[in-house]
Length: 65
Image (cartoon, rainbow, N blue to C red; front, side):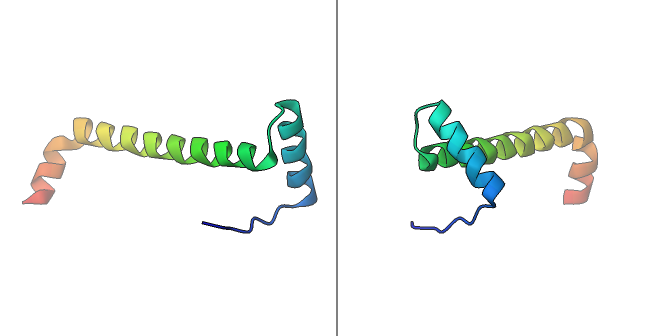
């Protein structure tokens, strides 16, 4: 899917520097950043849900009735 991403001058410069430092394209660096951000958020949400089930399982069972 095509997408237009508008960056500030500072964001664009930082992305360009990072890409050059790692000898990668700006697009590749942006893709990786998005994958890591999304993956981290999914993992954090799952950890929170696991904790809720463990710590508040009895209350959740009562609410489910």
